[in-house]
Image (cartoon, rainbow, N blue to C red; front, side, top):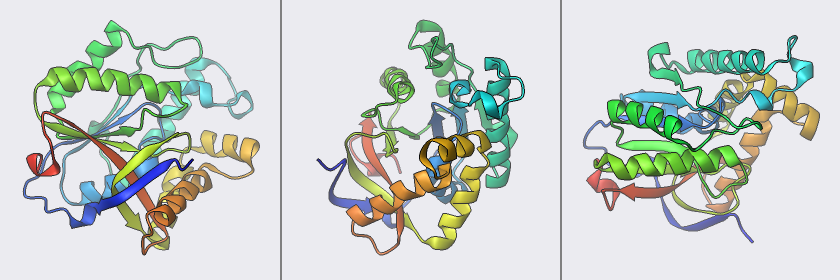
Length: 252
């Protein structure tokens, strides 16, 4: 069964953006932002206000051998620094990056509880995003599932129109391709460099899969472009979900 359902998707480059609206990248873990870095750069370069919220430190994803002091706190600090480094390379100011440090369960997944929902809701209402980017919930990653559940609750309660862009991840089980952003080799090299700032995850992928985090994500983007029959070699793809709106024209 194909994981990507393609039926006449729309290119992000073809949309007429009649107004600039706030954009929120809601990353369950450090590096989820970088997995859609080309799309983030597309909107950032066009002057869209971009905020990145990183829900958890992702400490459980760091191998003990990679950290001289393999405690949860040290691993969390390491991953946050990796995200800061990648954002500096990207060009995102420190003021637009926030680590939520949500409460986690024993396995390092964010808890879908009252405290975490209140933290997310407070920042959500402050930013008031019209576009929210986050991993698709139809995914084997429990962190992705829980952050989506919390986001959906906040989006419904917010009362203002917005659209969620749910991106395809290596662990996505099945999704629609509603919109895409295709790109070529030069941009792929830039994205690979962005991803490699997450050194702990790069090494972990090398140890587990014999290729780095850059190749793991770029391989998905090559599959996306192939399945969508695009002219370029790579593409980031998204399934849309509307809240208080019915189409992109209601947002832009």
